[in-house]
Image (cartoon, rainbow, N blue to C red; front, side):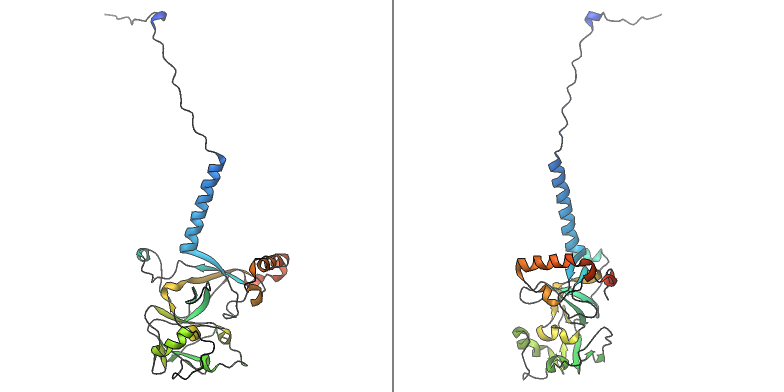
Length: 269
C-alpha cells in the first residue's frame, strides 16, 4: 500500500520565531594591556625570587675576580639548605668551600655583599702570616691577591690569641663574641654559618672583622658578568637622586668607551 505524505497548507505552517543571539562582550584594549602587564610583573617577581637577580660590584674587595663596575646575574636557583619543601624536587646543591656568594650583610641596612666561602659549618679556620689554614691544612687560593705595602696584624694573623687585641675596624658585636668561637688558636664555625673573605685580601672587610654569614642570609652565586663598565668606588657612593642621575647620564654618554667588552658574558669562578 502506498502512503502519501500530507503536506500542510501554506497558511497553516507554524511560524518560527527568530533566535536572538547574545552580543559577545568585547574586551577593551586597556584590559588586555593590564592583563599582560600583570603577567609580566608576576613572572619578573617569580624570576627575581627563585631564579636570577641582577647586582653590581661597588668595591674592590673581590678583585681581580670581580671588578668595580661589573654587573652580575646571580643564580638563586642553586643552593639548598633553607628547608623548603621543593628542595627535594629541584637540582639544588650544598654550598661549597670556594664558592663566590651574594648575601645580605648581617648588620645595618647595607643591601648585599659578595665574598668567597672559606669555611663551612664545623670547619676550623686559622690565618698565619696571611696564609689560610682550614682544619689544619693550608688552603690553595690561586684567586687571592695581596698588597705588599699593606700590614694588618689582626687580619694577617687570625683569630686573636687573647682579649688584648686591637678592635679598630671590627664590629663591636663581633669583637665581644669572637673569642667564644676560638679553640686551640682556631676559629670554629658554628652550625648553619659560613666564614667568608674577599679575594683582594688586604682591601676586604669580611668575616674576620664582622663575623659569620648565616645560611638564611645567602641569596645565591654569581653566574655571569652580563655587563662591565670602567668605574671607581666613588661613583657608587650614595650621592642622592641628583648625583645618581648625573652618574647614569655620564655613563650613557661614554658607554662605548667605558664598557669592558672582554668581560661581558664572562663566567664567575
